Length: 52
Image 1 (cartoon, rainbow, N blue to C red):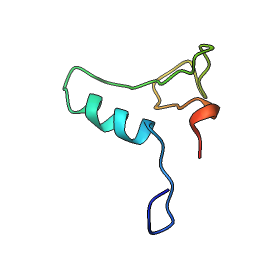
Image 2: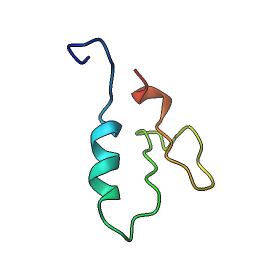
Image 3: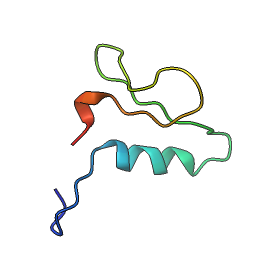
């Protein structure tokens, strides 16, 4: 948790790091079981297990 009360996940660090490369269009993060919030289509989902 951020000291001002906002929350973040590891996805908040991974996504901008990968998106800095022009060839990266979307970043989909999956959990160990292969699940994510929206597995199809152009989006930036995060698995429920990583949600704050």
